[in-house]
Structure formats: structure tokens, C-alpha cells
Length: 83
Image 1 (cartoon, rainbow, N blue to C red):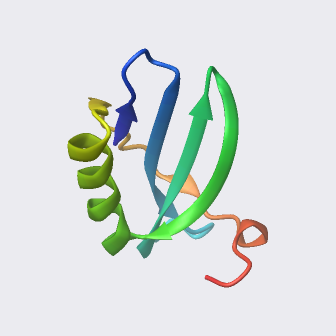
Image 2 (spheres, rainbow, N blue to C red):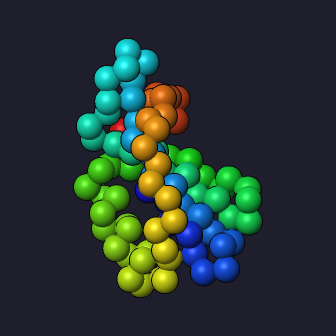
């Protein structure tokens, strides 16, 4: 899923994640925050936290759902300090 702030300056993408063997990671998604076209952060978050963040950003900060990211990204354990 992709959320975009008013003015299109801030974009938050949530991607499904798969392991190298092709199996899906059922616990985490990849969250990428982009500001003015430059990636600011990439991290894994628990799936249960995604819904809360979506509600918070859409209802509290006026973000809009602008896309649905369905292509799984490859899990990188180097990005996951304490997953």
C-alpha cells in the first residue's frame, strides 16, 4: 500500500516481504518513507502495526491511499537488527 500526504511531499510505502527461498514473511512488511523524492528510511515493521499506522496517517494527518504495492520485496536480514 502507498500513502501520500497532501502536497505530495511525503510518501509512505508498505511492501509484502519474501525470503530468498520464495516463501512469504507472514510477520513483517517493508516500510519505506520518502520525502520530496528522496528515500528517508527503510525498515521492517510488524503487520499488526501497519493497520494502526494507516489509520493514523489517513484519519489524523490527511494522507491518501494512492497505490497498492503487491510485489514482494526480498527480505534483507542486515536491515533487521532485532526483528
